[in-house]
Image 1 (cartoon, rainbow, N blue to C red):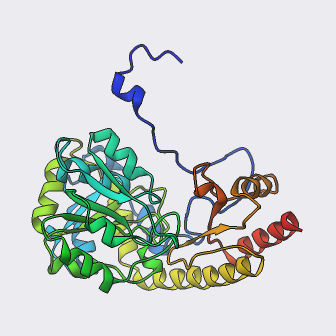
Image 2: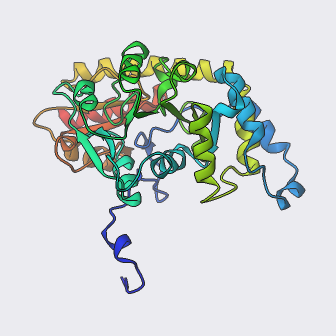
Image 3: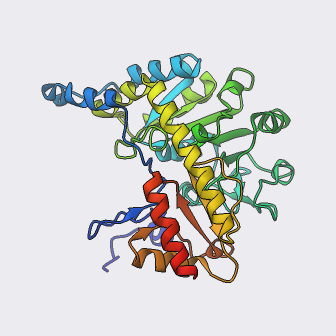
Length: 355
């Protein structure tokens, strides 16, 4: 590839690698933590009710309607809500908004959402990496001891699925009042211990959420943050230095409709949690080590049978799971919780592979 016009910086960056989205064949797709159930019927109605003529106009630069809908759902003021083009963009904007390239840096775990490391490198923010404990839980004491500007904590964590309860998380937030704590709650609806209630008590906590998982809207690309008015104002300022219109009119209409149908999504989430429990028990009976997951996926390893072998054999059998060829992670695969039918296919294929 001709890289003559690339900057030296982009040559050095290592981009994030998203999960496979193959189009060449039909797979039982359990690799990207998409919701196995469709969006609310209200979402379909919102799409069908869109006036195409209105698309010639720019959307609201502040996503005002969606911020108001989210604020009502979360029990906060619209001034406490920021919306962006997916939670990844919200997280990305938070790095330059709250961290300096010549400052103390951002602290996060060694085995967590790998985009944190990419964002830190992209914006030149120093990293303070803290290993997880041997049981894959966060070492919050070690993180607290770091000389840093703030923290990124995925709760539940990815790819392990392990969650931190709100009480424990509050103790951590309260113990570091001069440092920002960014809580990435992409999978929180499958756990139910959101730290949004902490926003009213602590100025240093920013909770980031997404419409991609429990709302089954990964194709729309919309996420949001809830925090103090000062933190949200900082994100708004950074957003307007980058992209004044990150949330398009279609996304705003669709996500407003989704937020308004809490009962539908609560029922869908219950089904995912029930299947998670069934799948987790079945995997353990087959000899897999599976930490207790609070997300919509399972982190599973089976000793001598490496993650790569399981991933490749399953793919050949038409089932996609996620595999990372990195230390520790290469012993595991991450399995998205699918429908009962999809999970049954997975288990049958695994039995054949391991027999």
